[in-house]
Image 1 (cartoon, rainbow, N blue to C red):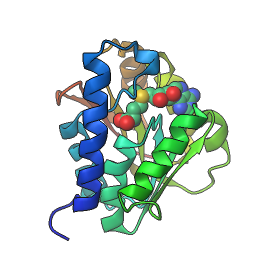
Image 2: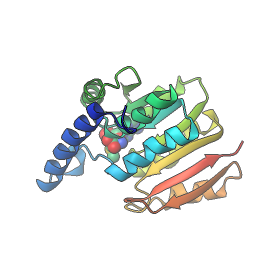
Image 3: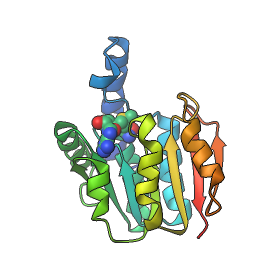
Image 4: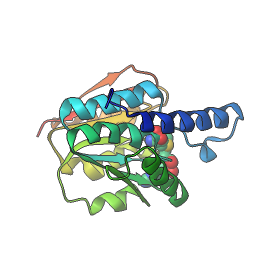
Amino acid sequence: MAGLISERARATLERLYADDARQRAAGLPAAVRTRNLDRESGRFLAISVVATGARRIVEVGSSNGVSTIWLASGAARTGGTVTGTELLPERAGEANRNLAEAGLGRVAEVIPGDAGVTLRAFAEPIDLLFIDAEKEDYPAHFLAVVEKIRPGGLILADNVLSHDLSAYQSLLRERPDVETTTLPLERGIEVTVKLA
Ligand SMILES: C[S@@+](CC[C@H](N)C(=O)[O-])C[C@H]1O[C@@H](n2cnc3c(N)ncnc32)[C@H](O)[C@@H]1O
């Protein structure tokens, strides 16, 4: 395999980024767009998975699977798996079809429904959590899962500079069991390590 992202995954990502750009250019409201994360942030997700050796990876807000493909590309290297969650069942279906097209259907699965419900049943310690759902819900998503993240595990959250995520960022900074920093990459990624 040449590089971290296979040719198959790259081709699927390019098709999906073209769709996303068309939706934005047409001025469609956010509620009906796929709202995919940008390429460099996606690359950062894949790099984070490989660099930390993460094997149990969880995503809150998968949409049609663009970020899931980036995470899964890393997980294909570490021997890990990605459990994605997506509120809209049709989006979750699209995500799973896109993962299969990208050759990553055995590495990642997006489960339809509310992340809080899906992840309540998640028993394994989590190595890496990615949050990219509705911005006002980030604190609740974090609090619902934080006890399942292993010490040394990573929590990444997108859009902390493009949106007001000060409540989430303050919550992290008040907790002694995490250390956090804001990475000014594209729309802003909060990078947090669980200490204990
Ligand atoms: C910004 S988009 C995610 C984009 C995706 N991470 C990507 O890069 O391709 C946010 C998604 O979160 C989903 N969502 C919102 N609340 C959710 C919840 N409670 N559980 C699961 N998914 C949720 C929305 O339906 C939407 O598709």
